[in-house]
Length: 421
Ligand SMILES: *[C@@H]1O[C@H](CO)[C@@H](O)[C@H](O)[C@H]1NC(C)=O
Ligand SMILES: *[C@@H]1O[C@H](CO)[C@@H](O)[C@H](O)[C@H]1NC(C)=O
Image (cartoon, rainbow, N blue to C red; front, side, top):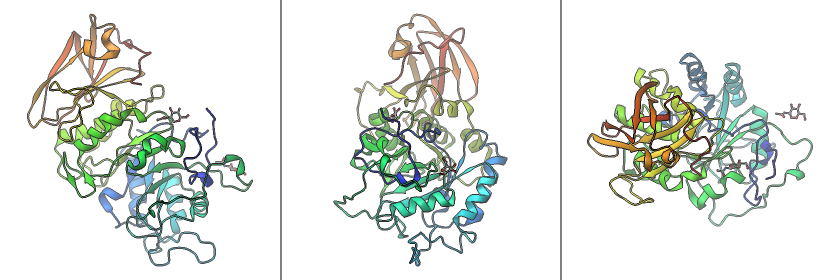
């Protein structure tokens, strides 16, 4: 593999380059963690929103847990003026951002956090603001100049059958090319099998339509949690260091999910190695929601420095064959690995409490030692549940997800060489 230095001037570099790039400063190696305005504020944004969120990320302890990106979504630019007539640079909305985007970036940076912006691969964003098509180079340079650390690049209003001249060519860069590193979050909705080429271009790629705060079902282009988990059960293997399936921003705390549904949402997004981008207001956040988003053991799994793969489904449940696609009852039994042990996630998709059993002989990394006793630990409470032989079982509330860490009785990793892929 070719380690390639990714610079802001190259975020437009498209898929003709076969090798993945590696950001030398480590940007994008692990799933991004942060906050984005869309799920709660939509277009109703202004500088205060982002500065207040930045303060709250610090005050609530979320920054210390790794949530570092404060991201603007759509609607930050001037919808009428669009671009400067001479420089062609994007013009921020002066009402919403009186100091310009760079002013807001400075305030957020001064709190030790990073700043993300939004653009679109088409002529216009999804909200009808100007997109980057044809202006990729100037927009990359502008974002770099403003101190931007992260770019969400949406997929609205792309002309059909579009091809262009942009090809990745690191040796072709001028000496004055911007050289700051921008985490590049492709928002290509899973189209064109982005999971198969996203790693040659960006650090993460959206895998599906928009998320909505509902357990299941669909509303236009938005989807509940279970259809997204189903998609993840079929495409989990496309996540690893430097490139992540993005199952969309967190709805934890939004809409009318139950406590158990909020927990399942967070546990599974951690298990998938999805970016963890909070989408709920922080000034009114309730303690149980903050506790979910602050679960250290789940975050540690998502951010593990040694094992980059997503957890995988090892059994669908109810005697269904491996690979069954079911948008209401997706795969229920998941296994992953970390520096601390083997992790099992038991997702109860049923509308009632169910007795769920993790049978050690069915879990490939535990098979070799399946006759032994294992120590089972509850990642939600941080407490050991005891030692067990052959299986561990518990009653799981409707739509809840117990998250277990399994080690040998002395705490040793049961199978440090195993990875889901
Ligand atoms: C980019 O290059 C300039 C000089 O060309 C240097 O001062 C700056 O530190 C570099 N920035 C990064 C992020 O590498
Ligand atoms: C992405 O590319 C990096 C660098 O080559 C590689 O380490 C990683 O495994 C790739 N990720 C995926 C999901 O293929």
